[in-house]
Length: 468
Image (cartoon, rainbow, N blue to C red; front, side, top):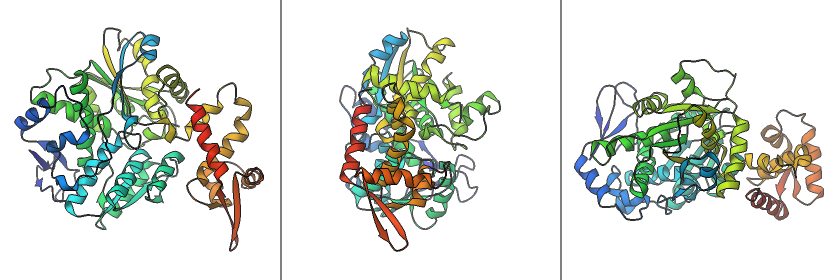
């Protein structure tokens, strides 16, 4: 039903491989549909039924049904927006991927790819990630009783690191952004480790494209789909699924795909517009879309051009406001990357791209409870603004220590690198005096650990943030 093929030299490979780079020319391999009748048959028989990811099992390449690793992913709700639709006078629907087991759409990719890994008998996996994919891989590897190594950049949400640590993933920190982490992960792949980085494994795309299958089965294809864009893998996944549905005759036309990037890190937008960055280094707070050199830039641009869509940009301030607005209007607390799609709505309306007669699906890819940005959301409200300078730093320290005990210098480098080194000890002393952390001398270093009281405080902050 599928072929694994090099798009450059057309060399075909067996799905028994775990190496997804062409041996002849070095191009990243792709998966192409070859049995259109089978796809039509499988999708058609699911019409009118509630579906989960593994209802599409026959549409995934080379997975032994006895090796499936699942936590109940997929089948996420597609719901009518209430508050946002009224506010913007649009016909909005929300595809809520935060309802997946680890609260992001990456669970789809991790489930299918780890099942393929087990089918091949490989029990060591590696993933470069800026957060969500790492949490998904660590969770599904834990379920499968295999080893996961997660490569993260220094600039990553601590909430996502906490998930990875809780699921037993081995964390290695490399570089400033996910681009650096990907290059390091490539080296580990050569040591017989199965690659789970979406940019390096086309099977992850097969899992992610089921979002389009579900939207089609739930409500039919809308006029627009608006989604956050970092590396372009999500946009490419949706485009791939749409092409397959059209090729088999299940849909007559494509929805217009609208990708959203932060204006502080918008390499796909800049290339599409043939313009230069207005800012220096990529440094958006929306870490889920902080990618300097997107692997799927050409595929993403092709997707928006072929669907008469576009890539748009928003400010980090607008993302911050959209995150609060979405929580208030829809009761959904999404991560900054997802909030970017809401932040883009006023711009798209002003440009005449969106109209009240259009049906528009907003893709929410991950939960806001994963992001350290949640603290800024809480403390930026008028009720808590006076606490911001002191409390923000202390909560970041507590969140860092919730991952594992650490010592002063390591905490300073991770939490306060732009402050004087001595400042960290003042905060640690105050936290210890309040019983939120404890210290213990080990050799020449003093290690700090979070207490039960400290963990309770972090949990309370997350609960409060949902109400603001």
